[in-house]
Length: 251
Image (cartoon, rainbow, N blue to C red; front, side, top):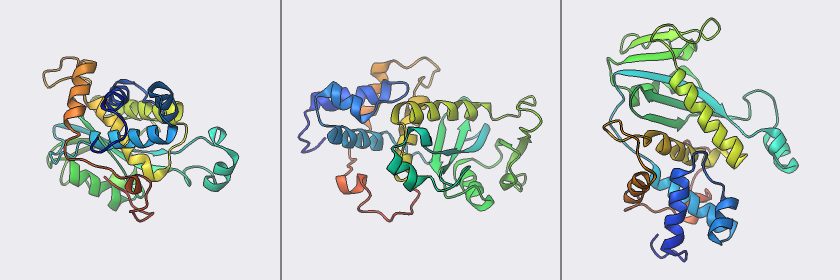
């Protein structure tokens, strides 16, 4: 907020909307509500998303689900020029891979990954999951070899989705919420900015309840988000990618 030409009243109103609107809020809608330009609302949105990043180094433990998905705008929702630029094939070719790790009864953490190869996905698991934890994944071959470090069990979705305690339904539900937010509110998200939208959705999901399991009020969620703004800054050049290499995958 330092040196911002936008008043604190609009900053806090924007923060309230981002953390409490279940499916997020687009820059167009925010601009209309706050009486500012869409460009200013877009930048405001991204600065708020940056402050929502958890950045915890504490690893998930206990019963943990790991899964991956692909995020990409629907071609029918894109402007024809954007469609020609971004859609050059079929399937997952023009979508972005995202890795998710969910501690049951705890928090979800997500990150953009370069691919679904064994080295990439297992590096994320080693980074975020404590050794010895019960780890549940689907039948993707990239997860082979985790048995030595974790109590790893898999569920084959071609056969069943649940086998007792072995499932990834928690993350499947989270992916549904995330994709509903992106396709319903933002329509199409550039891969470079995707990690900030992941931070936004993870913040709302992880702060539904307090540490005692009680439902967190909208005001408490707002206060927590405001407290995380201290010491963080996002410039226009950083937000638009002018200070970054084009092929990076921030965490």
